[in-house]
Amino acid sequence: MKLNFLGAAQTVTGSMHLIELNGSRVLLDCGLYQGRRKEAIEKNRNFPFDPKSIDAVVLSHAHIDHSGNLPNLIKQGFAGLIYCTPATADLTDVMVRDSGHIQEKQAESASYHNMKRGEPPVDPLYTEEDAREVEPLLQPVNYDVPFEPAKGVTATFHDAGHILGSASISLKLQERGYRKNLWFSGDIGRRNLPILRDPVLPGEDVDVLLMESTYGDKPHRDPEEAYIEMREVICRTLQRGGKVIVPSFAVGRTQELVYNLSRMYAENGLPEVPVYVDSPLAVNASNVFRRHSECYDDEMKELIHSGHPALEFKNLTYINSLEESKALNERTDPMIILSASGMAEAGRVVYHIRWAIENKKNTIMIVSWQAPDTLGRRIADREKFIRIFGDTYKVGAEIATVGGLSAHAGQDLLLEYGLRVKKNAEYAFLVHGEEKGARPLMEKFKENKMRQVHYPPMHTSIEL
Image 1: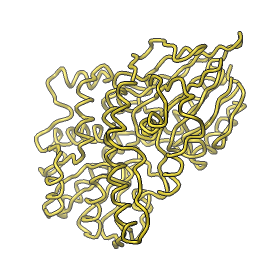
Image 2: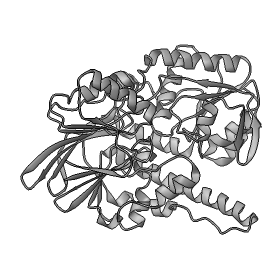
Image 3: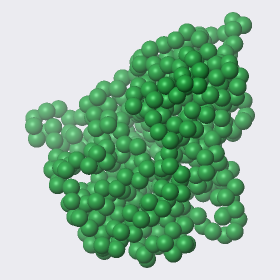
Image 4: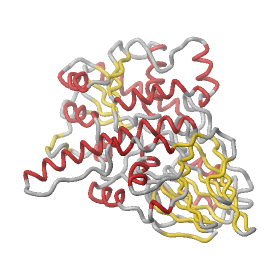
């Protein structure tokens, strides 16, 4: 049996790992790579295998860097089942269709600029219609229920506590009497975050651990400290009459921020200004959140039981129409806008940033990890001049980066997570992390006498 590292290896996005045994091929995740446009297009269009040869996909969660290339996989011939939790099935359908719409719009824009230069048009990676082909192949399986995606593979989903429906995946592998227990972490959540349950740690019987390392270089602050800092940033911006623009992932992060803002208003901690969630995807995702209370933690269930709306409050408006979105940029009154995408690479938030970034009254608040070469990273790095849609803007707005709101585990929990398998594991592979995150975590494991910890390069393999 062989494990192939085909995505999110020595980088964060584009999660994709291939298991081969008994003549079958099972793909763990099929995510979009995000980074420099030309490189991203090349990586996402061309799979390092024949999609027709894949027997099944086992999906950890719905975030686009884990699910976003499924339409392309199907477009190129994959016809098997995509196993995931029920909440992930609902979110993935919503997310890939939204992604298809974005792919079309980006291709349309690129083709327009190419036409002016006498260059050929650009085809989208996939269309919204292509993305609709994903839903019929989604096979929902509840947490803690074993299933068999291929011969010799028994898989089980465990709550990863990262976003709604997110899962770590334990896989019992058997080939010609040879057995291995593999645990794929997916994205590991954090303890004591709103809405969701805490992540389940791997069992001690794991032989091979495949785990994320995004924040392997540092522990996170207490979420309560981040909550207080977020409130302070918002208050000082509103007091000077400005807008707070928050690039926010439509699934998970937006709902957590809404939950926090609801709490701030309940505690009389914010001035009475309007709050807008400006993302059709976030609106649809919030509806999915409401349908899947089986994923909630006890605190969230108690809130719902007591009649608290949790994802609603008096000042909050969910926006769908483009006209309403554009109108926000024409207004000068103080407000809070949460808008996708979380790395400010596409979607309505890019327009909000463009109209807000030169005004010193405003704040662009970065609340999550930003991939290299994205607009969000350039803003977080506090570059003095920012290019948006080909035009250059001088940054006048306050740039606030609020750490500690991440839905990814920090170094302390990652270390605890990995050390759970120290006794029996033959290998531990750190993926879904840049070198600055993975290397310090490797050193921590070595300090704790955990051997055989690797940081595999892209397109490498190992016989298990």
